[in-house]
Amino acid sequence: MSKQAPIKPADNNSNMQNPNRGTPGTNRQYDQNQGNRGKDMNPNRK
Image 1 (cartoon, rainbow, N blue to C red):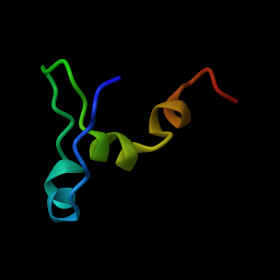
Image 2: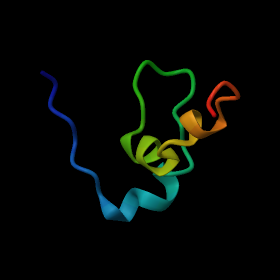
Image 3: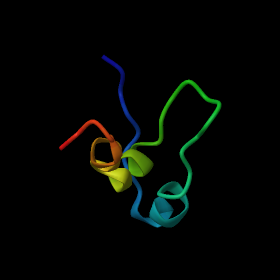
């Protein structure tokens, strides 16, 4: 079990726009901002 860093409200604006492409980890604030976007954009979903 890895310990995650706390989400800092001061970093929200920059983190929500930063997917961290090319790195092994993900940005939790970016993931939460995207929500169900991938599921909604799936053309196989009715």
